[in-house]
Length: 588
Image 1 (cartoon, rainbow, N blue to C red):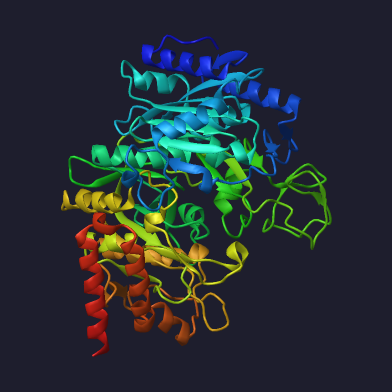
Image 2 (image 1 turned 90 degrees about the vertical axis):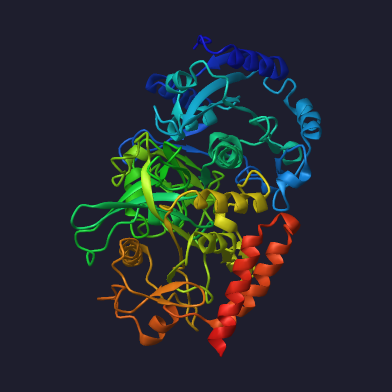
């Protein structure tokens, strides 16, 4: 596609990038289905993609990335603000001048012999005042095709830009894929992203974490909204009324599974509708309510562990028109990963294309993915493309805690809820680190994704919520409490709907709760436990506060807060002190 007639600022920037990277060809993506099919065909011919079985996995492909390029490179990801303090202690920082000096030689001539794809994209529904436009320049056809799935791409984005020059500028090149020459740099003050040396989605699909969260969170603070690492779901009761919930969980805590929850047979008449599984942009509307849009158009989800038992809606979603990355390949040319339905195959090709036998290393990479259109999800919400978004009635925070956190509890108010989010944590598993139970603080599940100092981020949350009397109620959930034998006390998966029902009832003022030092917990009668046959000891653990564990938790919270020095909002220290006093009174 030749260069369209767009704003001079766009063509000037594209020309600047072309002079630096020196591509053999410049192609402007229009986002059409014809273009997408052509990209897939070209990548099939050059071996970038392997076509899967056309009957069992129609219009689907396997991509194998370089073995050194299989996950987000957090240690090579930088926030490049003029002042180091503005990046904060939880981010890697590099000055803009140093970053440009270091990356410019890596980009110089990087696209010689390659095609430069100019990809205009829109984050958010077309016609929405909450949508934001960006352009990614890349030399990866895999990235360009993936952006067709993950964003509203092409003309719809340029139409949104209209006469404005406000767009996020993203420059990406595969480079030589060397980890020694790999960087992902964000310049929030300039709304610029530079990424070189990686083709992995989290590093290369710049609209996703880079724009939607790191640059997005910076813009949100400036403009008075929230860019969050949250799912969005609609919970429909048997009478047909839908209530919308946003939830933030760290990795390995079931975010996508909750977003696509299928109600079990015991929950007759209830439905869950998926608005988004990963990112929420939230604004207070004229009526004082908080509205959320999903800025993405697709799902970029982890494959291992996904099955018809854990997430039947996602399994139905990926049945066609899907790009699989770093999964294994069965002899019948269908994808496979650990945890998939059915028996373990006798032999497959592993994620690197090598013969694999059961009982050896993992066949699919633990971070293998699929990129698939959201509209294929059987539970996709009718308001997925609503320009105004959906009204959020409750916000959930949660992590993987074996002992400390009860099954569910409600914050006393917005400020206390921000404290719950700011102190959110998960415990590691042996598979992740070799150590079990190591607590990692991950406030609002944003530690890897906040584009500025998290102390200022907490302050922004406090101020945003104070603007409205209609702010959502805030809750904390924990599906992962374990007993002495290490087994989970709560069945999880579809049964989590029982917890969502209690949350919904609380929002509507129709459920009882008991006040505890940490928040409002369900009474036994207010939480539907029928048919679960939970042992009394399990129920006691799920719906009680372990004072000793929480007292220990206070010290760890304090150490985390101290990292932020004088910039940490005083309100959070006050909440910390109030929790300490409530726990002391409980012991009297």
